[in-house]
Image 1: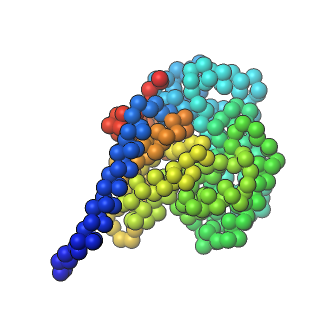
Image 2: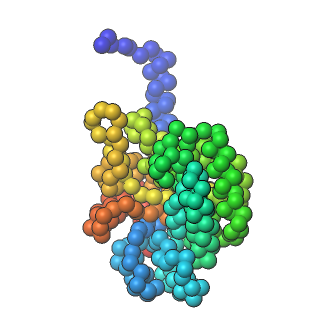
Image 3: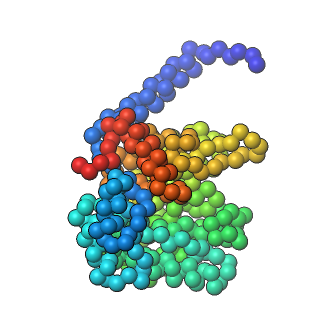
Length: 313
């Protein structure tokens, strides 16, 4: 390939851009210094006291909801009191289902589950109830040619409004997890949903790995993370902590892996998260306690380089 020499103007421009990028990173590192964040993950919940002990043993200050929607008010209050006493945030109640399914029975069941789980999040005081928007294809969480269309966008808006309007939560939020092949699939599409749904109880859930859907995003995921926080940071209620790797084989193969085994820019992720230190960072999808411990160790090691801690203040 023929060598191309930069003109003086091009060289000056690249130097300015490089300096600007370095300045952004430096500002982020300074802002992160001394911040204490919340990490969480699964923990057994035999009873409130045992649950809190298990979370503490893992070094977690955030947790998934430990009980189901059929739990009595007394049980929910006991867990909520134990969490508050131990300074543990109940981050999420999952409502994993397909409320935009073409199958009417599946759709009705999903809507009922979303309402029930959002009500549970309200009762126990979780930061959010989270689901994906769903799929118009055969797999409830899979791709479809119709997922990223104006018609499906409008269906998601109407469906989410109906769930929120039925439950009327006052202290929790309904959120949609970011996805590679369904809305919200970018910061901009999430902004569009926020404006279109137009409900105070609708907020944002962030899983950056789920947005890494191309080599371009894979190698520039730090910029993707910073853009998401810049546009949506105040609306984020919970985040997922995973990692991703690009395989060296055709065609494009992207695989979810344990934090520390992939290319996700955790320095950018934690630096941005430090601007919103009470937003929980939740580990997920790992096979056993040993893998969760390794994932937490990696994230804590990156945090330490930024002057961030996940320990109790």
